[in-house]
Image (cartoon, rainbow, N blue to C red; front, side, top):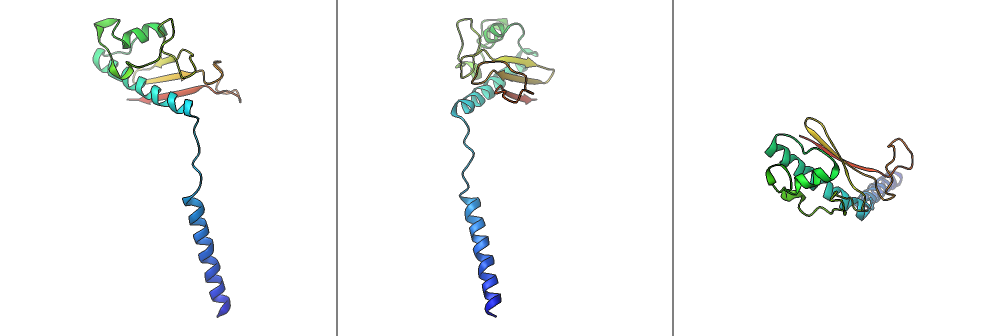
Amino acid sequence: MKQTIAVIVAALILLLGGYWFVKNKPQVQIDPQVARFNDRANKLIEGLQQYKEFFKHYPTGTMADISEALSGQAEGKVVIFATANAKKNDKGEIVDTWGTPLQFYFSHDAVMIRSAGPNKVWEDSRHPGSDDLYRTDTK
């Protein structure tokens, strides 16, 4: 009888301890600059999708041309408000959190935005030290 009660008490302690651990497990902290990149990239993707809905194609040309198109300085003179606050460099290119121009890739129904990341160097994603960041959305 005492042994059965001891087993039940031990099981309850383990269950409560496991519940407490899961409930209070620290959340993975994301770098605030990476979070900022993700937020801005999501807004840019939204703006690029709006541009495509309006013009029936994605903007073309250099990174500066794409930035101009989203700012209403090109075809149709339409400003895409989702991208209005995007940071730009002296060349007019939209830049990431670290000041490096973003790269845009388009397919028929998808957009991908690439950042060189904190080290500001474009790297092959297979490289173990690569810190490049990517955001995409398919519609």
